[in-house]
Length: 161
Image (cartoon, rainbow, N blue to C red; front, side, top):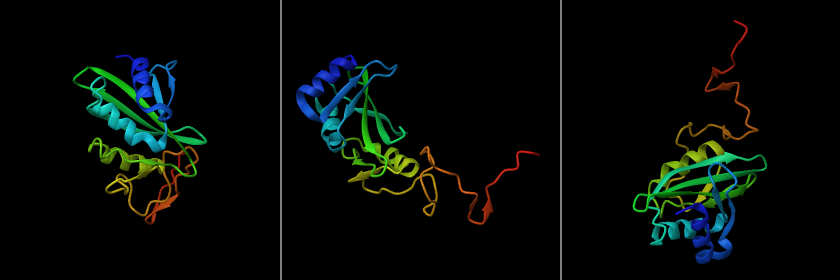
């Protein structure tokens, strides 16, 4: 099934929860309302025409004034894939957790929280996964400035050596 057909199927089933189809890119994607991501992903998994039984990736992307949470779905049964994106504002990056749909989303969501600051409501254990608990900021945001010191260790580099 092509992304256009997947978009039509989801729009027919979920209406306004499904946004625009962005088919002009190398990897076409479907925009989803942040508040509806659980309903949309559950439909993607349970609809017999879609049967997306595998969340292969979930990541964040800093888009300047907002952050996208990107979901790559795959159906082993039907051998098709799609990409969903949720857009959240950078000052309040909040969406719902899909760990109830795919348990494997757990660490993906923790990584997006750790590196981009996206909060996933309903996540069973949302805490840092890569950085220490006392780390300040989210290093994959474009405006992030790497600290010159951490834990008494100088992080500056002398490139004139």
